[in-house]
Image (cartoon, rainbow, N blue to C red):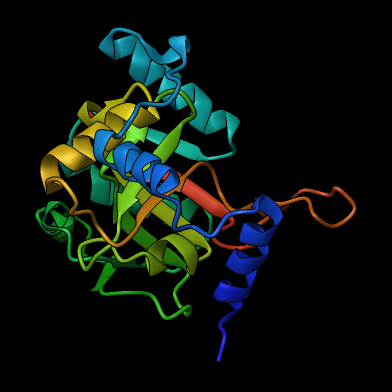
Amino acid sequence: MTSSRDTVMASVRRALGVTSKEAPRRFEVEQRIARHPRGVTPARAQLPTDERIALFEKMALAADASLDRLAARDDVPSAISAYLRARNLPSSILRGADPRLADLPWQNEPNLDVWIGPSDGRQLVGLSHAYAGVAESGTLVLLSGADNPSTLNLLPDHHLVVLDAADVAADYESVWDRVRGVFGEGVLPRTVNWITGPSRSADIEQTLLLGAHGPRSLHILLVG
């Protein structure tokens, strides 16, 4: 049996007139993977720390995310409760097992129900902790795993994300350098999710629709 992937790749090879076994081509691919050549880094994000964080805020808001700037991590539970009340949402959230979220003072919000685990699509609000932010585009970077299940990025209508201001990098390449440095060569999380604003699509008659393939609302809790 031939898989759909095999069929597609065979069509590409026929169009290029190659077999995928040519030594020069394989060497080039191996070298590129080994060297991790850096892509283009926009000059607009190469800024001092405060200006870089301000640019992240500006770009995130331009992508239709909402954002609260919090002085300390202890302010996160009350900010979440305020978000839920302002939108007339149930006082309940689902989060991953990230220890940074577990250490928050949830007891300060006794009316807030906090559940732990992946989403099955029935929850309205999911909470994650971002690995990093990217100033050049207002993008959040989340690593898959039990600490921050990818289902929380995709299934709830409202996705809330805690991001430490110290983790806002200038550009994509800086984040990839950080990920490789932490996990080691050849070892990466199964998925590195890059999220810029809420889910949207304008495929039908060029009409913008939020929540087309995921959360209709992305709210960033920027701490520090």
